[in-house]
Image (cartoon, rainbow, N blue to C red; front, side, top):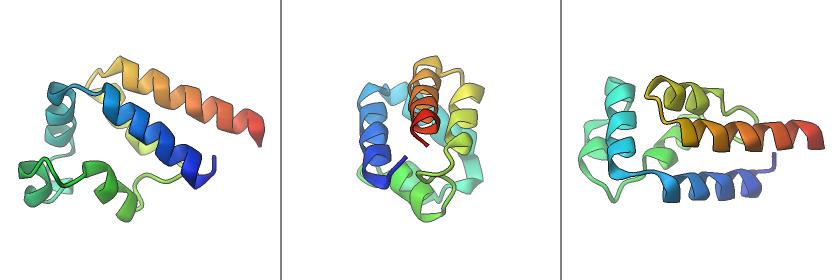
Length: 90
């Protein structure tokens, strides 16, 4: 999955997440996310995960697993769909 397609998928995902989904994800990630990002909605959790290389266009399993654990099924389906599409293109 190229970086632009992946970032477009993340933007679609962000649009579909409720505020509750975001709060649950931040709580789940806990100490792995700095408090300033958890407290300030203008700072992007996804940007942080990109810069920490926990999520990238080659590996999205961290994000899929996190959404699976918090039972955000729509996010899991969307990410797995992009992952499968990417694997079939390779």
